[in-house]
Length: 529
Image (cartoon, rainbow, N blue to C red; front, side):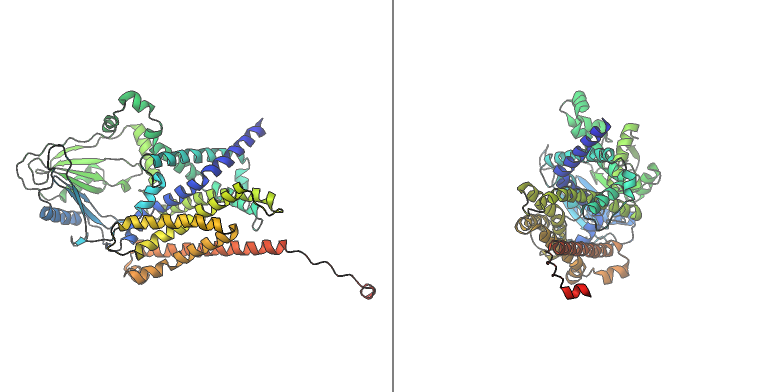
């Protein structure tokens, strides 16, 4: 009975991993890159200089700019720079032309030290990887549904994998190099067990994040189809008065940072929202930075009167169930993580990606052995082989092309950010075509080699196209830009090693398959000697 149950779990683990493995590999890889989305965005918009953080000075500069360029706006939004994102971003909303309409938003980027307007290149940056890993570049809500279903399947695969491997921790300490399928299985078990708590946390928390979408029964029972009422009850906002139509001087906003910090027990402000600036009914909302604590709380605001500076209200503390859910949300995003912990997140994410990839290779390899003598691969196995190549080597190649597009596309190109994304998907699509036309092992080697060359050459391309190369960033201590170049170079070396190992393994297989020459007959003279 027990063995039958374990065999059923093995079957479930195998087929769940195969059917969603290619999608999960893309979700895990792009989600892993998203842990450094701010650093990636900084590299892809090098025109934004990095400075020492002074939130009060930056806020004063932003206020001065908005008072000069948007004194009659109905709303100001100021995103302050931080240790990871050096941009000082300002937006303003024009007063609506007619009642009931929404005014147009305008956005500008400022130098956080001088307040001068900057024109950074149009780029999707690291935000593309963050959005892709849960939206899959699909219309709302279909991408989120597909990603959530994949997360459910991943959770099932993890639980069934734990049940299947009764010697899971013993297998963790077993690795047999140069043993073909056994080596792949040992590697799959090792990376699976090494960061198993991370895998369980990241998968379960992704389901918690979208629980209102996948488990809406209680919401429908209480609020019907009025979801706005549900979210208003979930995230109550401090009411803001209507515009009075009476001009009033907006005092300096910088002193409000300290008052908000007191309300948050030392927390920091990430965004300042000024409603009705220059009006007698002006209000100022300060939103807390998500990096202050593990729990990710949406709309954790403090509201002040925009004329007197009097505290009007603050977001109340959440009940325990919401705090627990916010904790899972924060653990998934990792905004609270410092540099060392963020790198640990990144490494664990790569381990999860490797676990999925090795599982796909094992599934195909075990079935290819049955057809090794005939040399003819069935269509379904050839299809899996093509999807394996394109979903792994092809995806890594597409990431490299995405970065190259950022440096090679003309700065004045209209829709430049979208063209970066187009380059990513064109390269990914071509990898599928290449895998179809070339034999399996050769396609692996060629795509890995090309990806390695692109990543290794990326720091050189950066030096040829911008002034922010390693010779400058290392001296200036800009570790976001320098770290990006060095990480790409290291990734290229790893991919080159992988291509070399695959080339060498293919050569070994050909040598073993080579026909042996027949032994020469032994002469009588040789026998006597």
